[in-house]
Length: 70
Image (cartoon, rainbow, N blue to C red; front, side, top):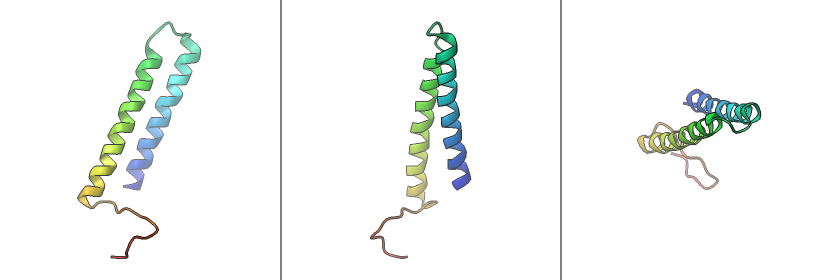
């Protein structure tokens, strides 16, 4: 699970880096920056929903200061 979430974070950061690259290179003449940022937002939302689903299914446990030990 950690590997999957870590890879998802890397893909999100890669999308952000590509948006920055397109922003500097295209100077606003194309929609590639907007497309890369839209992809980053979509991936972030999917990752968040996956983490919520994984917690609901019991695949991951929440951690906290006052959590009782099971």
